[in-house]
Image (tube, rainbow, N blue to C red; front, top):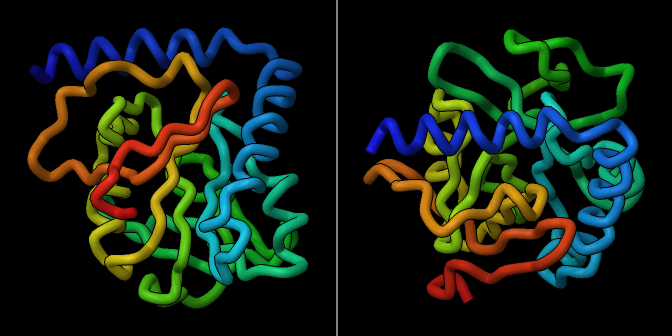
Length: 190
């Protein structure tokens, strides 16, 4: 099973790496427009986003706009196994983290106050499970949220597959938004 997960990571990573900057920008804009139309996101007070790396969907222009009316938090890696949420107060209050990811500086934000988490992933499946880069940061962070926090996977359409061969510790999202579709994948939430 691990070989299948690794192969999925490799195939999708190569495909995402082949996107041009113009494709990333256009597809990201389309995805952000879809995100903005989801009621759970529109009515949220606190949204956790992410800083993109390796041609991931770029949410930052949209999050900058949302910051005028909502609290935006981003992840910050704190050690080999854990991350925390930090309020994003603007580009001038960020630094490069351990993996070269832009991270906010500041005090930890209470995960119990987060209404929505926009979850990155290398691969998602039709049941909401995801593969990241294999370190498990989100799988350890997401259980710390309120039970009613809305988890929305964000990726390109080619990153959604039938199964990612999930482990018992994997944590599924409720919804996935791509450049081509929106999929409710975890009906137990609704």
